[in-house]
Length: 217
Image 1 (cartoon, helix red, strand yellow):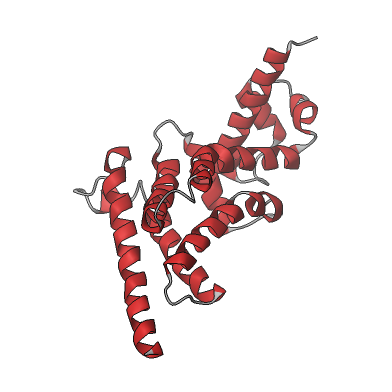
Image 2: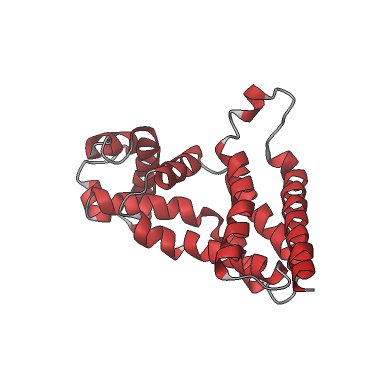
């Protein structure tokens, strides 16, 4: 009987191999046999460890989504101790760090981008559990910055704008240096990019607040 360490190793190899395959060919274009061969495992190992191909796909997505969860959990724990502008800065930094981390498997971001562009049934549960919670945190930060307060739709729009700036750089991190040779986007430039997105977003919100206060007056 395989040891627990051996089973854990096989399961992780299957996750990594499946992530690479799904990111390259999509769910429907990836046969279980290819995953097993890439993982160096028996073809029956997928059913043994995950039940079926779809449950493996869910596990792969969860692996990618939860990679940066520790950073977002820390933000939740510090919510009562940091000023609101700093919380926005740290949220943006955590988001960027999750995408620019050189130790993160390349397939993580590629697969998540594919799911966001063409959501499958796994999104309903997995994204709602993790990414939905992170967006709710961002929207909560934005809501506190809106003064006078706005409605939920307005807070959502501003939160989407903050998120959109960050995702632009993450989704185009390989293309931008080719289009703009002098533009360097990596972990070394994380602080500067985080500050830029934060200051840009705060300026937009401050402009909104000034307009709203003039209207109320």
